[in-house]
Length: 381
Image (cartoon, rainbow, N blue to C red; front, side):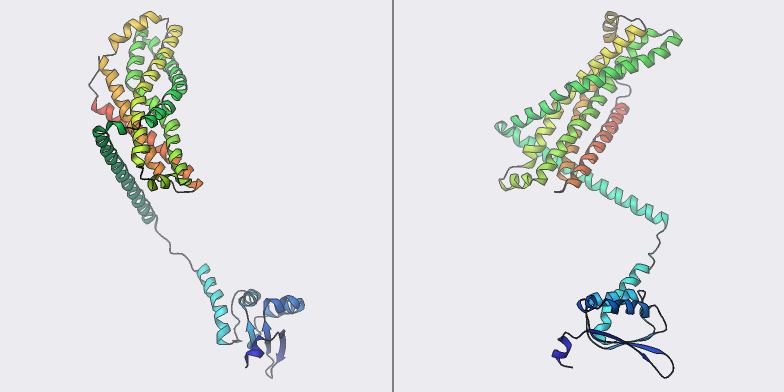
């Protein structure tokens, strides 16, 4: 057959021949293309009607041209399976084989994994991700140590503007929310404790409970959780936005260290501002507890102030300040770690910011538990 015959604009033809044995053979000829199918709507209707009979025999040996779109139409009319008897050219056979192979993949059952295997794989992925992130944090801490050693030799290179700006954003602007939460927690703690102390006639011990719990535990912990949710998320989002807008690449192109200009100022600022916020939160919590104690137990403000130094040793204040420094260090490192993990898309920005807040709060509580165990018998009256 010549190329002119193959590429000629001959129409798509369909004829039904009856054989001597009574069986019917559907013979297709011509150029079976989507263009010819669209020009002959009755042909498609007839084709669908004949394809419904599974006993029909099909002969496509006289088809000159068959495109993939028309092959899909025939495949769908046949019920997405090949007829029992079909004569077709080898060059047209592969068009149907492609759709047949896809159909087999769809109906092939997926291998069922046991529940224990799925749990094992999930644990492996979780543990692997944990160790990789822990390694990144250790590397971040090591780079921070190198930066500090460098700045000790060259004090003029200390990024004071970035540090002071972060102190203002993470410390000064957090005074309002930490004061409010601390005051309310002091009221709640004092009120609930008063209800129990009244039963035993030990109202005066409300000062002991408030002093030790607030100065040693609640004050630093509340301040750290609020800073992690407020400032930690902002730090992560800031670095993430710099990734999305390619500012990090620009800093690298100019030879500016990411750790020196982004990580170190945040770590230093939180290490400085967290102890101050802890003292501020503890003071507001004690004021709230003092107001509640005066109203519920009739303990005067003067009595509260005079007895507080006697029931709370000064060592508890230093333990709270030391914890706050560690809290600030961990919050800043975690915020920067997840900030640099952000990919240049908005979905990753929201996902890693959420992970940053959750991880920071979890680590703060874990560190607080470690401090409680290590200093169990230290600073007690």
